[in-house]
Amino acid sequence: MKSISLFFICLLVISCNQTKKPQTMKPKIVIAHRGASGYLPEHTLEAKAMAHEMNVDFIEQDLVLSKDDVPIVIHDIYLDDVTNVSTKFPNRKRQDNRFYVIDFTFDELKTLQVTERFNPETGEQVYKNRFPIWKGNFKLHSLQEEIELIQGLNASTQKNIGIYPEIKEPAFHAKEGKNLTKIVLKVLADYGYNTKNDNCILQCFDAKELEKIRKELKSELFLVQLMEFEDEAKKLGHFARYADGIGPWYRQILSEKIDGKFTFTSLVSDAHKLGLQVHPYTFRADALAEFSSFEEMMETLLIDANVDGAFTDFPNKVISFLEKQKTNY
Ligand code: G3P
Ligand code: CA
Image (cartoon, helix red, strand yellow):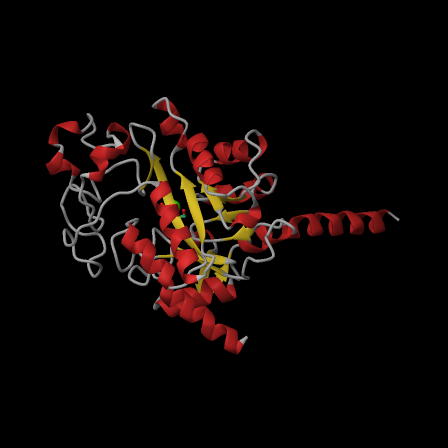
């Protein structure tokens, strides 16, 4: 009798969890990480348009507030590793020698030139074979401008590509007297992103903030808890109480390489048992580390480890890999 009730409880948990994923979401999704950032400077509207043309499932937006509370699409709270801020506004750095997005108005930010990521101490380009540094005419933009580009392209190309915004450093914003989450949720709602079926996945590294988004702010969006450290794997059960998925660093999934084949930690299977989708970051064809080829990275993580999506700087390569798999699987 006891085992029968346990069976029904398990069935209930499994069926509850299965409802977390919208039916329209593909078994494996491709997320354009900062846009098609392997080909154009990250988080530029040009990189987002290129990703859209590649037919990705989602396009990512990292979000930081300007001085006048405009959510800006940029990876860091700093400006000095992707813009010419240090030459344009040399006197506006803080004591730590960094230039902060939050110290500039939207109009001021719009005057900056955006370029390929570089080391602000040496001036050297981080990914050497990408778009040439300081070439072209790229600008910063707001979340609203990016949504209008994506929704506009969706209308004109009859596609339904989603957005994947990230709340960046909410504790830093709070210390500066700002509520990034509240502002972002309002913009998302204004543009029709309210529920799991609205093609928007909201992500955050800060677990307290993401839990608050679900429990206090009552958001019904698809939520992904980003992860970075090994010991966070112990918290999956807690994450499953408010999140629909996890976004781990891909190395949290790998264990060792034996006879040329990778073995895995239990992270993906544990997450799946809890009904959590797994979208690891970052698939970079030009930063392979332990993999001998990008093909090996994709095969290992997307097929062997069975993750549900990939944040990638090279969306076209992941899409064509998955398309080939469809014919074989
Ligand atoms: O948000 C997923 C991935 O982008 C996390 O890493 O540092 O590139 O935002 P990061
Ligand atoms: Ca991100």
